[in-house]
Amino acid sequence: MNWLFSPPSLDDLIRLLKAWRFWVVGALAGALLGVVLFSIVPPPYRARATVNVDFNLEEAWPQNTDRQQFYYLERETRKLKEIAWSDEVLRVVADASGVDVSTLRDDLLSLSQPAEAGWHFYADDRDPGRAEFLAATWALAFTAQAQADVAAQAGLNEFIRVDVAQVEDLPVHRSVSRGAYMLAGSAGLLALSALLVLFFKPRTA
Image (cartoon, rainbow, N blue to C red; front, top):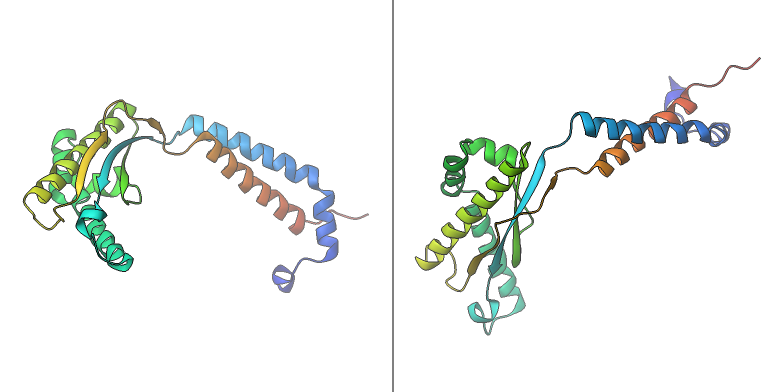
C-alpha cells in the first residue's frame, strides 16, 4: 500500500502529460454530462426581491467616531436580520403561500449579505411564478415589520429607513446556471481521467 501514498514520480507525470488526449476527452464528456443532467433534473428557479435599508449614519451618530458607527451598523444589521427571519414575518409568508415556516426558513428562502442599501430577498421554487410570489411576499412582510418597529421605537433606531425597492416583475433565474453544471461535470471527469492515467499503468510487452 505504500505506493498509494507515495508522491508521483517523474515517470508518472510524463505518462499523465502523454495522455492529455484522454483527460481532455474526459473533460469534454463531463461538460456534456453536466448539460444532460441540467436538462433532466434542473435546479429550482430563484427570484430576487430588493428592499432598501438606510441607516442614516449622519443623523444617528453625527459627532461620533468610525468605531462607534461600525458597532451601530453591526448592531442594527443584526436586529434587522432577526426581523427578516422572525416567526412573525415568516408566518405572513406561510399564510399567504401555504408553506410551513420551517420549510420556508430551511429550504426555500435566503437573504443576501445585508449591509446599507439594497437587501436581496431570494426564494427558490420549481415554479418561477411561485418563487417570485414568495420573494415578494417575504420582502413586503419584512418591510412592514421593520417600519412598524421603527415607528414604535421597538428596538430599532428611529433614524433607520426601510423601503421596498423591487417586488414586481422580479428577476427569476435558475438557482444554478447551466454553465456551473458544465464546469462541475468537466472538472469531475477531468480529475477522474487524470487519476485513471496515474493509477492504471499500461501493460508492457
